[in-house]
Amino acid sequence: MRMPVRRDPRTGAWFFRTTVKTPDGKKLRLFGTAGATGPYEAFARTKLGAQEAEQRAIRDALGSVSVATPTVATLIAAAAPLAARKEVPTFHEWFTGRFWREWVVGRRNKHTEVVSELSIYEHHLKAAFGELRLDEIGAGEVAAFRASLVERRRGEKRINNVLAVLSKAMKCALDVELISKAPKVGLYKVERPEVEPWDFAQYARMLAAARAEGPDWCAAVCLAGEAGSRSGEVKALRWREDVDLIARTITVRQQTCYGVTTTPKGRTRRTSPMTSALEHALRGLDAAQDGFVVRNVDGSAKSDGQWNAVILRLCSRAGLPLKRWHALRHTFGTHAALLGVNPWRLQVWLGHKRIDETMIYVHVAENHRREIPEHVLAAAAGEADPDRKILRMLGARGSNVAANGAPEDERAAKAAL
Image (tube, rainbow, N blue to C red; front, top):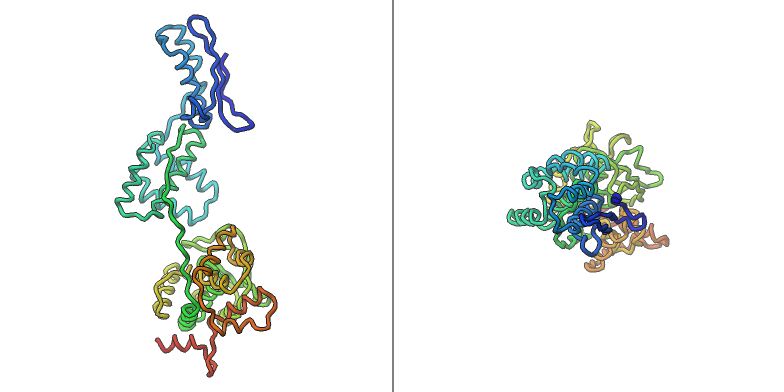
């Protein structure tokens, strides 16, 4: 008597247990677990894999008997799966259909992830796999595709990003039992690139260049370099909802990327204290304290093009190598670690989900020790609270005042214009 495949509630493994009768009247009891070590380890650990393992066990048991014998044919028919195997879609049909709806849209992937996955599909995966059925994509096809990316001189990090999207799509197809086995997609072992912050003197020059650029961009640079905000978070920051000049805090609750506003990275709201430099920059904005903090004259949000252009202009004006906005966040994290901030406090300020992300800045500070300027150390004199001590020193990095009362970094920037 044949029983359907079942799933072990303790281990989650799929197994089959069935009985077949040979033409000579003998009964054979067959049992096996899909994917377990033994004769059925090649099969996927799914319901479909257990059904295929059951069919092979029956074929092996009836081995030498001719399938033309009516009695044997009846046995084989009885041992067939109750439901016919599903028709396997092409990769294009799967990726743009169920996968996109159920695993990208349905699971509310962040907009940056959606844009990245769509770009990877259009530029890489569509041409290579679009017309192939999912069950036609194996280890050989993946290896050939990886080789083509290498031949096109794509970097290892980029290749890993492309292969990760392919792997995710294939594993999701395995989860819904459209295929019995997903190909292994080996990724390159790539070391995480070390953060490259500005040193103390360079950061002071960036602040001077930002002051010369205008109060709005000075505030933007301070939000990134004095509070560790990401550029997308600065774009979405609003006066009434996020800025408290009395308590001297800013609250990050959303970000804007590619013109779409979503929750911040990590989907976690955080509140960070202001340094004196950040507070001064925010109070220096002429606009009414409503709407976007960094905005155009008409109150509209600044475009991505404006943000990209101004950071390059600031680097050029300060006489520094060209870097993106994120270098200012790296600068805040590294300088805070160098000045002795508690790593768990820094984790909160930066909005990291895991402490190992924060420890990257601690390691950089330890491996690249920099001399701390005297005026930065002097700013913490007389302060006993460790957090306020760090904030005072962070806020003093760009405020070295000359005898005439003008900040030296500001005078240097003006002289360079």
